[in-house]
Image (cartoon, rainbow, N blue to C red; front, side):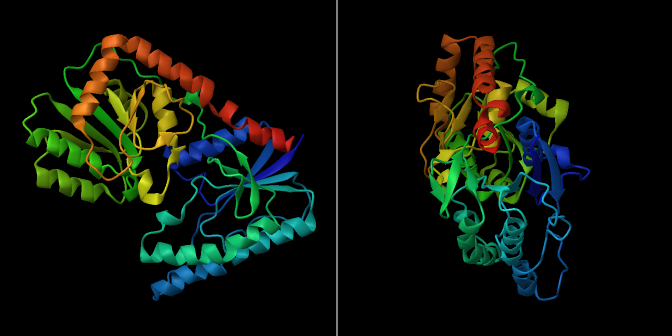
Length: 366
């Protein structure tokens, strides 16, 4: 049996670990490999000097992997989820691994590529400078980069192309009995600028300003750095009756929200970080729920004739709510709610279950 090590900076064993979609994905990935795989995880925990700049430049030399035993040649492969930023100590670690065991396959997953546009604050731009300095050395030690894009090479390293996957059996399909009197949109995310949900709020404001009478509600589930901005927009537009912020929800509470929703909203701002093909986890989770979706970015696993996803312009224009209403009314005029839910769920099980999406990696490792 192959022996592997999975390296991540996420704390997989914190009290709230399994409420994180990313951490659930990590466990599902390892399970799908069906290989004896150990974990090594150590979050970034640094001292806090008075000088904030010194704190972030200390990423250059801080060895976050000092707890990893790499002196024994016991691993056939090492799977690394993207390190932020690629730094001196990380490159040094890769070099030592190859020196100890040149036959060990090192694969490096980059969940989002390109990722440079995600670094938009002064601090993040500082980390990006560090990353750019050291990522050019990855090609000396990395065998394959796992990507969710169509790139054949990233940073000079050949890629294995896969799709983002989830464990469908972990996600409860929604149970919708009757068509709602109102249109309910649901958004689940850790809100960031590149999600573009300000476009949705602006669109609903335009919709009601034009005197539209049909009620449309937006339910925001989650938190994140853009949450206050969204709340300020809702207050400014006097939309608190129609836009509800529920905070993070899990388990039955989240399932109940999906059971009472008609359309789920994927990312609406991929263009803000030059992403034009989406592999985001939320699209998979929506599919597993069996709910129609809206996205501004082409979703990689969906065929062009997939009727359960409405694409909107990939720019900063407000979302046209009238178009959303027309789309949904046309959908339910041709299909029952049970057909819609079942068809979407079956598509998810056949196309984005992690047992299928991880096959290219498994084939490389065995």
